[in-house]
Length: 440
Image 1 (tube, helix red, strand yellow):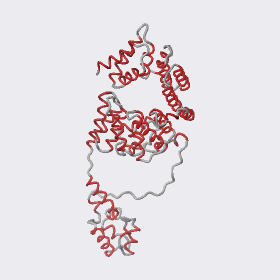
Image 2 (cartoon, one colour):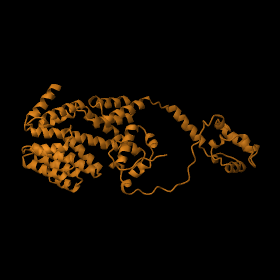
Image 3 (spheres, helix red, strand yellow):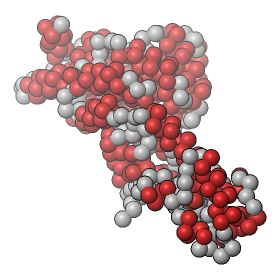
Image 4 (cartoon, rainbow, N blue to C red):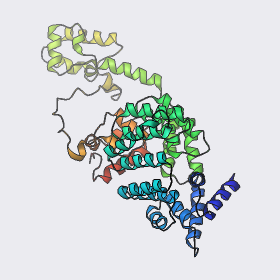
């Protein structure tokens, strides 16, 4: 397999005008592992060192490793052909020069590139430029490909998703997959939307289909690992992360995620103990008013600010009897109530506050001011992983302003929200000049 890959790369660099099919195969090879990327980068450096390098494959190769500006410079010198203008458009898109990218795509069409391919790439370019009206116009020109082209429905879904039309986008992804079952983009984005919609089973199935291929899709594997971890299937989650690290040993997010999963595996949750504690808390929170007491006893307890069973466990007989008008009769009534629950006065004091009552409901506080500007934007606009997004959903954090009023401890207290997700959130807020709430 490795020998075949080397032969394909060698053929790519030797051909002054490699075919789109060959370019696609080499692109898969380059992104298959960290080792492949390093080896390909070395081969690019060798090409650049030649007196007369094959300029077209050199420019396309620079695009593949993310050196977009250098790729533009090289491709502009290449001879005219569809491959030149298509990859020039992609490189310009990487530089966020969208108007120039559109012009390059138009030149690709004039040079003989497939019309549908050019049209769909123009849709993608307009979408990235957030010119949704232009993207829609381009799609409308290709309406005859409805229910015919998987790429048409994929690009339509991406445009709908960017505009918040999630249900429509998911339907178009389904149509795309029906037309082309191995369409990686449609599989990933339908899995992603299903995940955010809470349909974990569908998301797992779709991510697994992507992960079953020979190509290592890091995003699909890490998102799948999140779902397995949420389901308590830590071995499967670890297996996904290990696949990423085998191909990309220095992948920081995967490294941190692995630590989180290993920590989750060693955590012990005693369900029976939790159930018993919940029952105990329910008893302690029972209001005194729920029991039959004399008016005298009820009034005395009210004046002493004793409102629940839990409060009674924090006082002694002597303290009750020292209160005005609280006598032996009232004491017997109170002790009878506690004995029926297997409790007694002063019990919390004797056992080192083992029985702790939840704090009483605080007095109402005015709601926080409505967020405006950046603080009013949805957290969906932050570049966060599925794991982090789902945690924010569980915490009902919808805006960036709400997120800035949340502490690190509150986030880390959410199920499966570890250091990886915390670092993502802090990084995204820092990019906006914001931070999480500090208790200092």
